[in-house]
Length: 266
Image 1 (tube, rainbow, N blue to C red):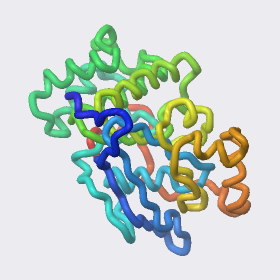
Image 2: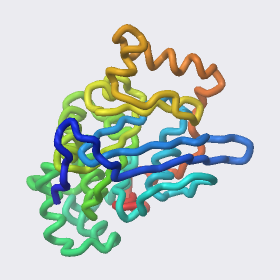
Image 3: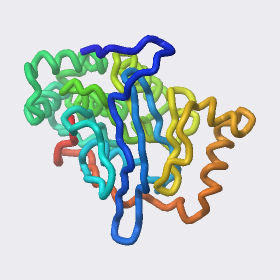
Image 4: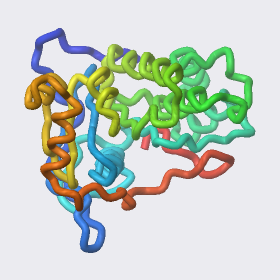
């Protein structure tokens, strides 16, 4: 359903707020005092190099992990989680996948909700096709539709366009920005500066598990004479070389196939 979107220029109260998040793995601190919020209708990019803690942060917000310190102000049932790799049942049709996840997530009136998500995700004409026959972009739209079945006010996406070609990526972003226009808060992780500049209302830059910057793309670009890429690289370089390590400490997402379900609402 559409959510109320604040008038332009108004100070909107966050629908998602997390404060002081800390996550440790043995002797490594993956997140160190991270706070983040998002308002209805806002698109927030979580930008950072590999190993910055982006996926770990999203998994805490989604309720897949518990923080060692800090708190998230929404329950997992209020958050739609879309992992980077679609974990779908390739031998089932698009509709059958959505119906299965709707039942697993106890979605009220599942048939109507499935029909609506097929329309919103532009999948109605592929509803009876096996998921394995879809392109990567089509499978990702099924993945997103599953995360929206419970009609959450907040949507979290882990690098949603990383495996898509330019045409698929543009189609995906038309869908995701439409979610924000309908009043949802959309937060996504990326290491693509251009994608953050083009689609995000605000950017949160993570470097070494800490927030190095939070503000609009224009505000970050202004620190480097209008060059957002240069400004981002400067932030990363200031952190030192040891922070650019793969983020190995996050829940594994099942590979494509007839494996375990991905999260609908986490």
